[in-house]
Length: 144
Image (tube, rainbow, N blue to C red; front, side, top):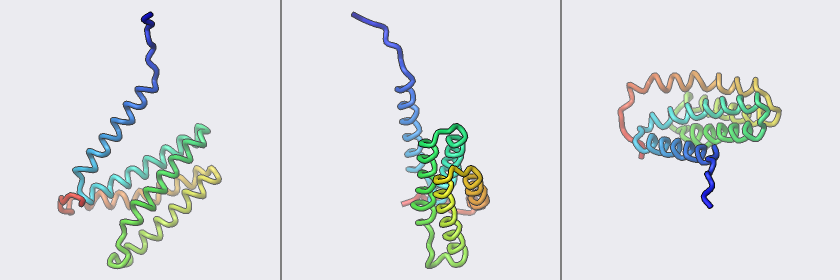
């Protein structure tokens, strides 16, 4: 009548995912605009790293999901956040970089090209580092 149930890893995976989701929302809720952009950069690097790991493991579905996540971060987060009208040459250069990275990620996905994924990570890293470095100079106002 009462059989011992053997816990599966599935509920643990769901719980870990829920925890990460709560942690992300908590971080976003209290973050400044500067910190939000930094989170996008970090999320991009994490997604590319996941894609490279999945590609190396032969997990093409996981690779595709991770690359799609990285593309969304670039296109819907970093690129749409640029003020091309008032940002001058820097905003134009970043827009071109983000466009190139988006296309290169798509190409990497289609051809399973780890080198292209590594190139995207290398291109974004100095922008992320520069953004992080100016953090101390940015007023600590929360994002709207």
